[in-house]
Length: 624
Ligand code: MN
Image (tube, rainbow, N blue to C red; front, side):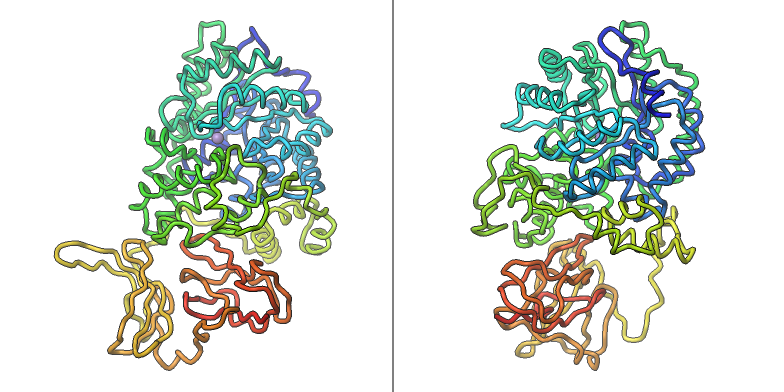
C-alpha cells in the first residue's frame, strides 16, 4: 500500500501548491497537553482527516511512544496500525531522533534498523529524522535504513540560535544531508525562534545549495511562526507544519485554517477545503476539554523564549514536572539557568534528548541551590561526547566537574555499542508477543515490562483524566504528623517540606528541609523524638533501629538529596570502577544516578528498591 501511495503523491516541488502537514495527532498535543491524547480520540476523526488532502499527517514518534506505554497504557504499535487502517490515503509521518529512535539514549545499529523497518511495516511513510546536536554520524544508520525499506526520508536541521550557528552553517548541513540521501529537508524550529527575515534568508540559502523540497516545522511559542512560514514559502519552502486551530498556537504549531486562508489565491494556494477542516477542528475543541488536567499556563505565547530558547514540548513538560513538585514558582529561575548551562555545554540545540540533559541539570542547579552540586548521569555522558560532538566549545570547568580528567570520545557514539537485539529477545522471551514488543522493551525496558505484565493479567489502566484530589490527604496512620506546611514568620510566608531526617550526632539531628523548594540541612535538637523518613510519613523512635548507618568511610555510597531508590545496578561481591553507577535515586521526579566514590568491591548493600533514603546514610559499602 505505501509504495503505490508514494507514486500518487510526489512531494511538492517548486511552483506547485504548498503542502500541509497536520500535527494535531502528534506535536500539537505533545506541546499543549503533555502528549496525553488517547488513540480513541484520534480514531474518531481519523477518517475525516484522511479526506482533507494534507501532504502528510504527523501521527507517531517523538514523545508519543513513551507516553503511550507509560501513562496511557496503550501499545504504541497498535496505535500506529489502527491509524494506518483508518487513514489509507494520506502519508503518515513520524518523528525519529536518529540513533535515539523515540527513546533517550543511543541504541545499537541492529535495534535502529529493526525499529525503522517495523515502523515502515506498521504504517509509517515519512520518517523525519533529526539529531539533537546536528551530528550527522548519528543520522547515518537511520537514513540508510529508512531508504532501504522504502520510506520517505526527511532529514531535519535542528534550528537554533547561538554564536556557533549561522544560516551558512545550516546550508552546509543541508548539503550534507542531501548527499546522504534525504528526499526532503526539514527546518526544524522546535523553539519557534525563526524570525521572518531569517526564515527567508535560510530557505533561500538552502535552495541555492540543494534541489530538494524544503519542509518548515516551527512552533508559535514566540508568536513568529506564521510570519516565518509565509516568508519561507515566498523563498521557496514547499511544505509547512500546522495544527488545527483548536490545538494550535502558543507552544503548538500555527493554525492550519489561518495558513490556508493566508495562502489562498496566491501562487502558493494549498487548495484545501476550509469548511471540512473547520468541522474537524470543532470536534477537537471538545476533545481538548477532556485533557484539562494537562493544560498549563506555560503553553501560551511567551516571548521570553527568545532568550531561554525552550521548545514547546519541553516547556509544557517542565511546567508539568515543576507543578507536581509544587515548584512552579521556580520556573523563571530555571528559565534563566538554562542558557547558562547550555553555553557551558557548547550550545546544543534544545531538543530531545539534549533539552532533557540541559533542562534537568538546570532544574537541579536551581532546586538544590548550588550549581552542579548534583550532576546527572546524562550530563556526565554529554561531556563524554556520548551524545555526539557538541556544536561549540564546552566549558572545561563544567566538564571537569562532570567527568574529571576522563577524555571525551571522538568516534560515533553508537560505534561503542555491541548489537543488542539477540540479548533483548532472550531477556524478554515469553513476555513479548511480537518483534514490536521486543523493540518497545529495547527502548523502555522497565515501563514495557510493567506494560506486558499488566497486559497479561488484564490490569492495564490508563492514568485517570481526573486529577487526584490533592486537598484530601490519605487517612493518617498513628503517629503521623504534618511534614509539609506554610510557615509565616514576621509576615513572610515560606513553603516548608520536611524531605527527610538523618542521624543524630551529639544530640542534634539533621533534617533535610525544602524551604520554598530549596534544599536546606537544618540541625535540630528534638524535644519529642519523632523521625520523619519521607514526606508525609513519620515513624516513631522505636523504628529508628532499622536506620542505615551514618556514612563515615571513603567507600560509603550516599545520596546528595533525599529520595527513593528506583534501581540498584550492582550485587554484593561485584567489582566496581571509580565513578561507576551503583544505584538510582528518584528525587524531585528526576532520576539521579549515584556513582561509587572509589573503585573496589561491593561489600554490603543496605537498600532495596522503593526505600526512602537520606543524604547522611550509607546506602552501599564499597571496599578497596
Ligand atoms: Mn516540534
